[in-house]
Length: 114
Image 1 (tube, rainbow, N blue to C red):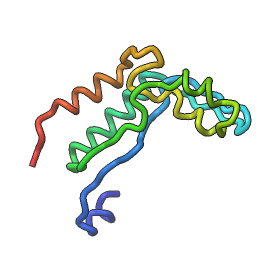
Image 2: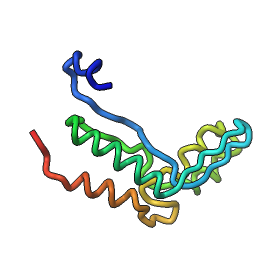
Image 3: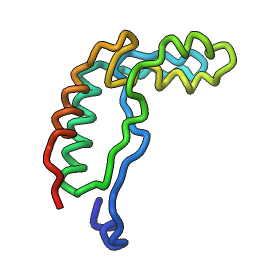
């Protein structure tokens, strides 16, 4: 996969990524996202390992903390799609760290390579 992009000789970066940590049902779209804290941590573990291996310039996680309270305020006027990000935080809606928070910290604390 990287071979085709390596020819551009540009740095890699990932922005606004996330993965659901809770099961989410989108009634209008008739979609169920089977998120769990374990799946979320595994996603970030794979992504950050790839970022380290290929020397990504940066990786930005879209949601630091779940926004359940915000969702309750905007759900009447927001597109259903916005709900997909509600439970993607490194921290849950109460500020409690999920397993992914440790994965993020482990990679964040690695020494920078040049």
